Length: 442
Image (tube, rainbow, N blue to C red; front, side):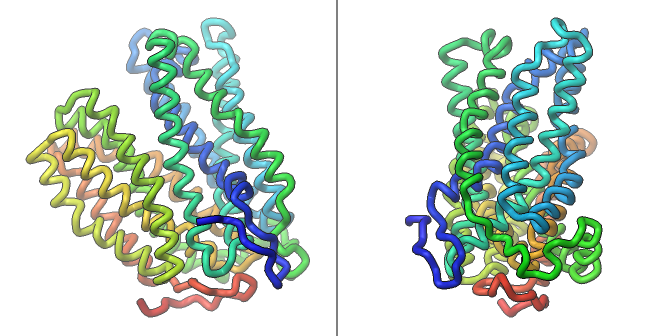
């Protein structure tokens, strides 16, 4: 299915495949970095936070990774508002540039054994810069895709934001496995992880060039609020769309928890179900395959049956299936069953996420679209993306109940299902018109 369209009478820019690739590149780079860091958290900790015991070093490395989440809400507000005030393109150029800078600082900074404490300071600053960029990336890039896409294909085009995450995670896994096979585990711990980060950065110049040539879609000057200050944008968002933002936050929270439970499945398979490391390390393949194929299906469905049904029904199925599926997995903990359950929930969550990524920004007026999505996305990911894996493992340890992840997942799926029911239907809505709010009939 081609992604380019002919020029339209409205004067909006045509959307070509290379433009879509450049726009979703920032989101893909985030998940590439996430996967690489998860693979190499131990040697990164040893390089920058050496300690007498391996556990302390690993925990310091994970704390460094989590530090970026602190900056996401700030990036959502500042860069999201910049995109609404100055245009999508300047914001997208800024975010990918900052993201690249943060990754480069991690890749090229000598270890603490060589540089001393300044090495730690440099990588901490780098992760803060990257967190700022990631918090501001999703709003401008998604707004651009929606505003440049044909009206009847906005769901499918925006779903590439989600599919790109699966592509990047799968690519990172394949590259890491290939390099480890060639160089060996010792080399990967010593310098291979730096090579993996640098490999991800090779796409940045291409992304910058293409993004710099994209036509602007923000419509600056057409909206009397477009040049408002960040504070004015926030006041208008909270004053006129506060209830809508709250519902959006809950819907994204449910999706974020689903993703986190999925990424925790390798740990769950090994630590809780007692399966081998070989089995657990193959789990991300099931995650990656589902998160490449099914977001596109979700976007296609959202264009045909509406955003709200695709937000509601996959999430409702997760709600109903979570406990039975995990109970079956605990009763029959085989490799195939782990892959099946992981694939099932990743597929359902991916379909759901595709409708969310298009339906939420469509619910907001153009002058607030980037800021609104950036804020609720960054807050949700900061709170739940960084805490879910810790909490579900803590619950298992505290209660001894191997179904703890299922209960957690079901609880948030209930919240997400109910919140989605009260969101407005936006399929076919004129993005230049002021949204009226209210829930449409299913």
